Length: 302
Ligand code: KIV
Image 1: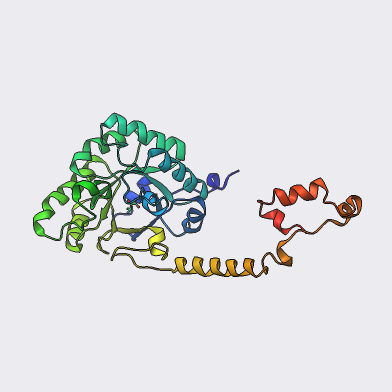
Image 2: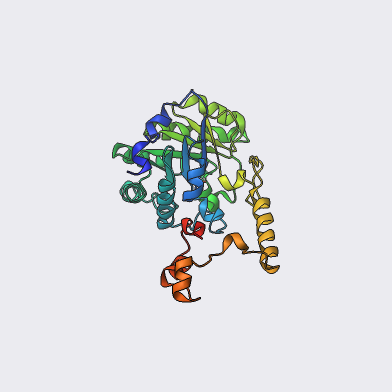
């Protein structure tokens, strides 16, 4: 029996019900190991299309293909058991029509096993959000700074720092919540606007660079771990994983060059019976243990 079948996962309606309750905790996750580590601590994890920049070195999220989201989404679902997994719909996979959005969202749900999708956009996406929600696809909306629109915005620009910008962003948030979104990401937004929107809508707002006024918070995991070379001002580095990786790799390189690694604890000896039979040659069994030594358990065999 898989661990997934014994633990009840958090659902989109569970997240929706957290409006006005305890703050909602979330992070991005792109692969199985990090999903496993963060799972006990977060209410949901987002397989964000930011993986295009963080994992694959693109300058923006625009080039990310649907297949990449599906591959990473499935890995995160396999690595986790408790948290809701939300997968981003990438640029070009949902804007064209409600039908195209449904076809691609259904693929994401079926092929990853995730519990919800996220898409960017305000009032102009409301019809699509209603279409998907009415047909069994929970939708997390995303307004304010929408990175997939970087080319029309002319950069990643904080929103709502002038009052004249507020009405349009408020209208976006109200439209997507009325259309049936179960939560709304507010990205890169002046604090007073985020506070106003959080009071206006009856679904939870999840802030990233939008202040503690939101009902919950999300950060890109690699940013808050100190792995990303540059981070926006709103990111707090809760760890220094980049420095830890560099230190470990430097040590490894030094030990390999000094022939100190692999040491006695990390090499395979001969089994007594095999070595006496083969008179010094490794038996085929001993060989296969070494050759197939990817398995962590075989590393323990002597
Ligand atoms: O892609 C992503 O990581 C996101 C978060 C920034 C909310 O959309």
